[in-house]
Length: 470
Image (cartoon, rainbow, N blue to C red; front, side, top):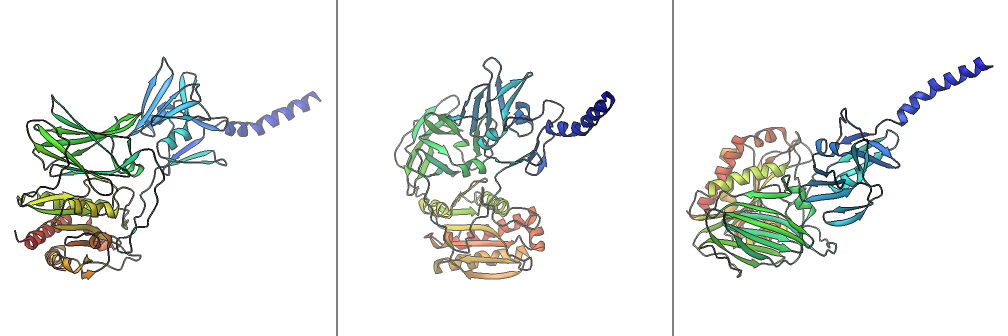
């Protein structure tokens, strides 16, 4: 009897051991379809209904900046303008300066600090899922979303959710002018600092919008910047959350020489800050576009941020092609003393169609040129077409098309009159250039080359010069 009992116990042990081992196994973590290697250190583990991960994994595998205070047992997680502060054993955390209740607080286990994965992931803008069958956590970064085609119809009208703060939606700098669009009225405060010379623009009761954060490449200290190449006054523009309580966005001009700053508020919550070389004294009087005889040309690289535009057959985004050509056009135009160039975006900023129109109107532009790549549901259509919406723009469209076609070497799809928001709502001659089909393998292969982009940029500039009679 005893031998039989021992055999049964031994059999049950062998049978149950794999299940017990599986039940105690560390949950898998998959980031954007790739399983994270948890390494040889402390793995993730389930604590109650919460997946907890060591702070090492937060910094190494998820790419966040982590600061650990041993004495207070507190941890600060940062990425861009986002921040999460937690303390081991405490049920309250601070997310972007605001207190938030925790279901599971951080804990210290065998010398390793564990933090709740879902809370940290969602706080940093990730989509977090859980598969109970496979014991797998899925993390997904926010993917680009297709913007409504300019060729189709106007943007849908949406009512923004109420917010105590205005949100900074876009920022650009060109020809000593900073242009900022926000979701609400902002009254900036200007000041100056010396050694080195700087001008400070503080925007109280303002935060960065989610679309702006996702479209920027913030550094590890939570700041972003615009490298300036067309100014004798400013070397760089920097921006960051200066304070969370009260919420304040700070923008800093790094100066090459002392300057004054003037600001003005345009329609639809557009803030303009104009800089002029001076003795260093700053002012806060409304600024208007200067009448120096130069022709003002708006270059508009289409899409940006979450609005990827067309996705090519090899997975490339139209927004990147548009920006590459736009920056080349800007660089060439800046060599002409009679032209002042304003580009709607210099990086992966997300703008609405109306914001692009407002930039052109506020700058009292002489020309507006929007740069795009085309697409279709099948790979057959190919070639270049130039689009306009008002009869006043046809001459500009014809001139640009005539210059682009010989150097592009693609099929000529002609000059067409189409109702597009950016070319219809602007008051100056305005065109939208479709420089090839990213859905066509031959066009796409050519469009992604530096040589093709250079040739298109040079042809666009030549057309602008001819149209302006310079």
